[in-house]
Image 1 (cartoon, rainbow, N blue to C red):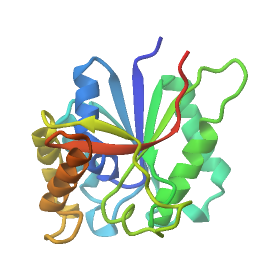
Image 2: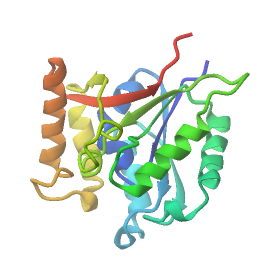
Image 3: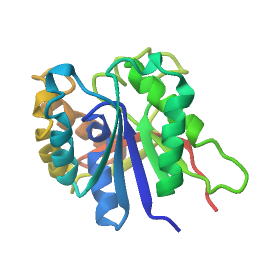
Image 4: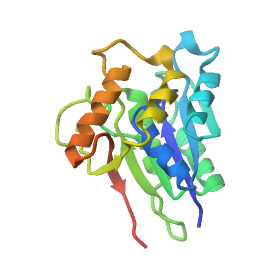
Length: 218
């Protein structure tokens, strides 16, 4: 059985903002975790963002980062089936047992498109191994979306990241160019406070929260 896990984010830092503590635990448990980033980041950071991304991921033990290099904020300009096909090819190559990706209700359009492509690429087909599909929350996008029952992030899976929170913050320091001053949610304080809030929900000091889309027990 494959021990590979993919985390698929739209932009550099998206892959870690809501998941780094959990991914560190998975790496420590022996899983091979691979980060996939579908679009480029801001133009001002293009010259070094790939290097920063690799350093950030390496901080939590992820040694392979795949950049699909689509234009920033323009994923909706390409046919969805093209992005879906790229993700399908990665799935065929790595055969992941689990995929983390953006929540469908995020404000950012690139996040929405990435989710839709992943959802399509992981559709259950005959003679294929089911893939667990889990969505993460992305600060300054998930909480800024439309608060309607069909779009709101509804956490139903929590991971205690008390022991890996420091690794998460250290990893995000490599993405310092993407961070903002508090009270912006994408600040170091904002990340820590969200971890405490999710932790209080389940009785631990720090947690990361997820919404499960599909899970199969065989």
